[in-house]
Length: 417
Image (cartoon, rainbow, N blue to C red; front, side):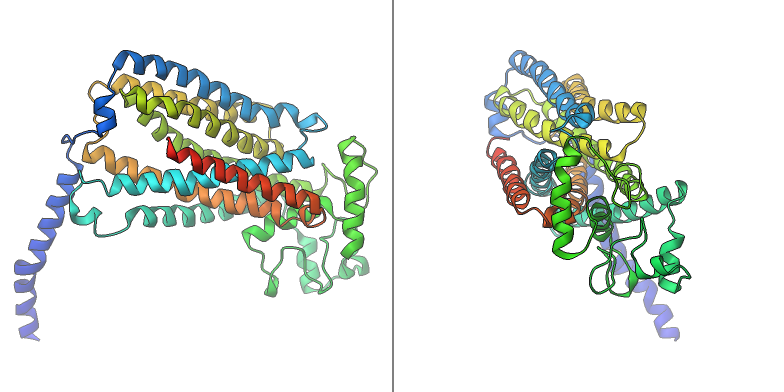
């Protein structure tokens, strides 16, 4: 015992302390605001006056694209073809989801990896561990937690706890409820499970989305359910509602779906804003027209469809007009504001310094994790696993095509931006 007690200080002083000091020095060196040479394109194509003109064009173009994209679902939600329950909206939202997914995987995650593996950074610890993937994974898991906790919070806040559902699990005195055929009761499949429910009575996040979508668009069971659903779509598009046991717009199911969309819209805006700031700063500090020119078109395209997806979620959440307006404006001005800040600090800010690279790499990786989670779980899975999608083969084909085209086009933009 005495031998071990005497040996530990020796080990600490000779080995561990040296490694700790080396790690501390490496970390401080990496965070130091030292200069590092810019890229060849940035250096050979430097023109501050032309870059300033392009930045002003970028601010106007990105602002207009963002405003139009986020406004279409909000302003057009009472129009026939732009309603959130129309097939055109579902297909356009699938395209936007593909754009967001490609933004996370191809642009943000790759940008974070390049920044954190930049030669300007010391080899230890940045080249010894895949930090970009780790930060993206942690951001996805954190988003899952926020998604779940936020949903629970809003359900309790709005009094959407379902005592009837609990009675069904334990046993109910009402025959219709016990049989699962009462009005407003969750539709069940042939095995007696609620749509989106797993074995053991649990329901995962994707199941909650699919369950809410199923609530809005289902009536009978099996093929009859699909027949009834398809027959009802024209009525919805013309604004008719005759009632089939529950309401399409003011019932409990739509309230439940509204709660999900409140959470989705807020988390999606958080993910979009976090990477929009970095994108705006990166464009603003650049003094190379060769770098800025392709970014103007790419970011305008990207901003429009991100705005459309966010506006659709806000519209489906059925939140107050003032709150929706604030969220839409905050989204629209974030990237132009980032460009303005980047332009203001471009004279003394070095985007290739180790501190800037680490900050950019971490934020890009975190944004990638958030966007990938939101695209796959809250946008794609929520719509593609819904009863409506499974009952409409033509809508399936169109939506999948839009999804792949959106992801493909946004990925192609990585060639230039």
